[in-house]
Every structure is written in structure tokens, then in C-alpha cells.
Image (cartoon, rainbow over all chains, first blue to last red; front, side):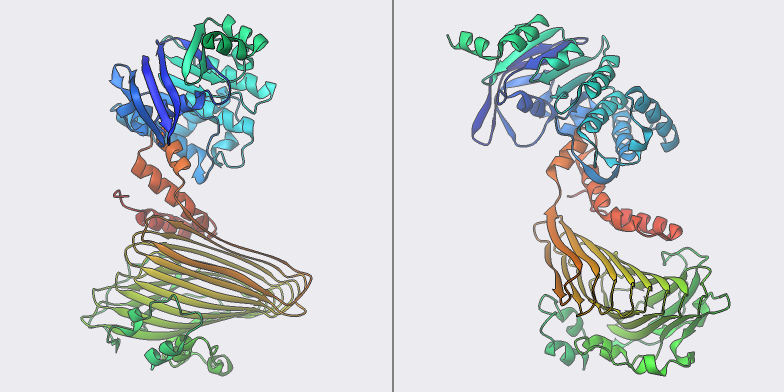
Amino acid sequence: MLKITNLHAKVGEKAILKGLSLSVKAGEVHAIMGPNGSGKSTLSYILAGRPGYTVTEGTAEYEGKDLLAMEPEIRAREGVFLAFQYPVEIPGVSNKYFLKAAYNAMRKHRGEPEMDAGAFLKFVKEKAKSVEMDPAFLNRSVNEGFSGGEKKRNEVLQLAVLEPKLALLDETDSGLDIDALKVVAGGVNKMRDPKRAFVVVTHYQRLLDYIVPDFVHVLSGGRIIKSGGKELALELEKKGYGWIEDKVAA
Amino acid sequence: MIAEALAAQKEGWRYTPVAALTGPDFKPAGVPARLEPLGGRVLCPVGFHRAALVNGRWEAKHAVLKLPDGVTVEPLGEASGLAELLSRPAPADMPLAQAASAARDGFVVRVARHSRADRPIHLVHISEASPVAESSQARVLVVLEPGATAEIVEETLSFGDAPSWKNVRAQVVLGEGAFLRHHRIVREGAQGRLTLGLEVTLASRARYESHALNFGGLFAREDLRVRIEGEGAECALNGLALLGGSEFADHHSVVEHAAVGGTTRQLYKAVIDDKARFVFDGLITVKPGAQKTDAQVYNKNLLLSEDARVNTNPEFKILADDVSCKHGGAVGQMSLEALFYLQSRGIGADEARRLLVYAFGSEMVDRVALEPLKLALADALHGRMPEEHL
């Protein structure tokens, strides 16, 4: 589904990714772990198409197409979803209007008729229930005044509504207490499907207790320096990132 | 004469391109050859009480007035008992309002003690198309006696390709405990110019709630003077200007707190695109002894193009010591973070931009309590969203 080959990228003049390769198949859950500044968030943003990054070398193919050549909204409509580490507040745009606009943009892209307001409201209320979100949040402005946990829950609600093929979760655990983490992880787990892939970017192993990955990759210095099964995450938790980095350097 | 008066103005006019007023050779507007219907041209739904000035003259055929007892809406020439108010001079620094004092026609709205206008009163100022540049002047008097309540929607419109200019002097007098909601909607044509001098006085516990919405016109200048004369009066000044092309809007207000315990909440927002320009000059003065005054003045601007310009100056002059006063001016551009967030959910770049502009402006439309008007304004706001070229 996703094939990243030798990806190099920079922000301004600063090289962040230095030859990253990763292959993700449908149905798989990949965790990308790494210390601060290793390039985890950069990778998520580049895949979602955020402006401000320059790819200097390498490719990213999504379902056989050049992902990096697509506008951000086209990537989304083709089924790529990024759950933000810091979801953006948009005063004046109601959550339900925002979700409906996004949902109908997908449907239109697929040649399906748009869903009307009444039918959508019913649909989105069901989805809100599934992520244990109070429907009152649908009438509030997008993320405005939401707590950290509510913002992350709102990201998972969007995930549930848009049903992407490839979901990128960027530090979804950051700022969450354990109860909120369980709810968010539960929402993600309900979405696991043989046709859907997840790439979970995280600093801590904690999230992976709840979203159990098939593969764990260690990102350091802009490259994946080690890959393994879920047990690698536990090892990292115990020993920290230093031992792998030292090993690679040696 | 007006041109000379304008030329003599310095303070408060330095950002105002007066050439829009002094350039064309304006002739006094005459009666149009034929009466154009209002239907389809005005924003307000039928069902409101209605009166109209066409080229500055009361047009009886446009009036729909089945008013309850205690409420009158009359042409200036027919109103009696207003000599004192009519002869009150306009402030010395409002030369255009002084000139408009000589207007022969206008609206007079009166609501008697403890009476209530059952439906909103829609006052239409319209400049009909003409082959030559034309100007008209008018006066507006609104008097609410103690305990009276009314909702007024003033709408100004102009048509045709030749320059037009409406110069209006308005006076609002609110008695003790009176409550007025005053909506002022500007929907001028591409050659429409509007200058308005508005003086408002509030007696004890009176409330004045204003919504100024500028949805088009080459040039609009408003000078507001609000004077809080009685204890515990409340003033809310809301404004939204959506400007594009080479449109210009200029808001000058002075709110004077001359009594104890008054409240002012002022928020003006402007969306400025293309080569348009917006000026905000909002002063709140607190007189000695006007203790417990609680006042806020804010201006927030969204610039959509590199050529768009704004001058903002919210300020206070405080001569009392026990007051709460806050002010702020902000000039910003479209949030790229928000734009990317919307795009990352599949919403196209153009739609995302329009959505963000709409969100910025809709706060002011949401403050309009009058439901049918709010819906019409939301539609008008949609109609003024930037084009896809952005």
C-alpha cells in the first residue's frame, strides 16, 4: 500500500530525513519509534503533504501512485489520513459542518452522491458514540477550547468518519491520561481491518500496549536503523534509544 | 461647500481618500423617471414594517406601515414636536453631518413610553440609477421614550454605473430603560458612496445594540458619537466589513462614558481583499466621575491579499480611577495551519479558504438576534466570499 524508498527531506536548509525506507501492506500496523528530533513528525507531515518541506531524494508510492506529487486534499480523498499531534483550532467552523464537508469531499471524489445534512447528522452521531464523544462537541467550533484529550478524541472521530485506507497517527498518545489513552486506542482498534493499514508514530512504548503493532521501526538521525516485532518496543522501553544508536554508530 | 468643509478637516481624515467625494461633479438627485420595485433588491424579508427614501425623498408607495399604538414612522416633513432635536447642531468635527442637517427629508421613528414595536422596522435608503453623478442627503431621527423597545434595520443601496453619494445624519435618543437594536446594512453598488454621522444618547439603564455590516460599496465613512448620560446604560457596537476590489471603509467612533456604571462592548471585524482598505478609529472616553465603567474596544482584521491595507487605532482616554477598560487591534492573514488541517481532511484549497473567511465573519452575523435577518445576512456573507482565484 505504501512504499517509501530512500526518502531525503529538509526543512529550510536543515536535512531531517536522510534515506528513509519503509514498506507497509494493507492490514498491517507499523509503529515508528524514535527520540525527539529523529524526524518522526516530519515523516508524517511529508506523507500528508504539509507545505514547508522539501523532498530532495527518494520516492513515496501509495497504491502504486506517486504520493508526493498529489495535493494534500487529493491524498486525503484517496484514503490517506493524518491524526495530528497538535490538532488545529478553527473558531467559527462547527465540527459537524467540517466533518460533513470532509466526508462529502471524499464521496464526490469517489463519484458517489453527497450525503444530506439530516442523514449525515445521524451517521456522525453514531460515530461519536463509538469514540465515546458527547454529541455536544459536534456543534462546537473545530477543536476550539477542547482539552488535549478531547482534541485527540476528535481526531479519532474524524478517522472513524472518513474511514481511510492508510492512517498515520502522529504522537496520538501525547498529552493523554491513561483513561483518555484507552478510549482513543479503543477507537483506533475498532478501525483495524484487513484492508486498512496504520502507521503509528510515537515516542513512548505506552501507546503500543493498547494499539499492538505488527512491526516496530526505530527512527534515528533521519533513517530507520532497526526493525523488528512488537517485542522491540518493550526492549526500547527498558533500555532507551541509546543502545541501538550506539550499536549502529559502532 | 461640502468639498471645502472636507478639505478643512485634518484630524481623523488623514487616511480617508476624500477624492471619492470631491472628484465627481455630484448633482442633487432628482425624482427617478419611474418607480422601481423594492422586491428582490432589499435583504429584509417582507413582514417587517417598511419605509423607504428614494434619492433622499420619502416614497409613500414603498411604505408598508401597520404600526401598533405608540409607534410612529413618518417622513421628516410630517413629524411635529421635534424642533429641539432637529435644531441641535452636529459636532464641530463632523462637517458632513452638519451639511446633512439641512436635508429636507428623512425618517422619524418614535416609540412611546413602555411601548414596543411589534415587528422590526425596515428603513431603506436607495439611490436609483442615473446617467450622471448624483448625491442626496437625509436625516434619521429615532426617539425611544422611557421603557420603549424597538428593532430597526437600516439598509442602504445604490444602483447604476454613475457615481452616487448618500450623506446621512442620524440621531438616536434612548430614554430611561429603553432598548434599541439598530442594524445598519450597507449594500452599495460599485459606484456607491455613503457617509453617515450617527449620534446616540443613552439615559439611565438604556441599551443600544448596534450591528453595522458592510457588504459592498466604493466608499463608506461612518462617524459615531455615543454618549452614555445615565447610570448603568449599556452599549454594544458590532461591526463587520467585507471589502474587495478598490473598496474603502472608514469607521470612526467616540463612545463617551459620562455616567456611573456604563458598559460598552465594541468589536469590529474586517476582511480585506484585493486593493481594498479599512480604517478603524475607535475611541472610548471615560469622564471624571464615570466610575465603574466597564468598556472594551476591539478591532480584528483579516488581510487576504498583499495589496490590502488596514489602519487600526482602538484607544481610551480615562479620567476616572475605578474602571475596567480593555482594548486591542489585530491584523492577521489566513492561518496556514488551519488551511492545511482542512486540506488534510479532503477539503479543497479554495473551499478551505472560503470556509476560513466565512468563519471569521460569521461571528458577527451570529450576534444578530433577529432570526430572519440573520439568515439573510448569512446568505449575503456567502455571496461575498472570495473567488476561486485566491
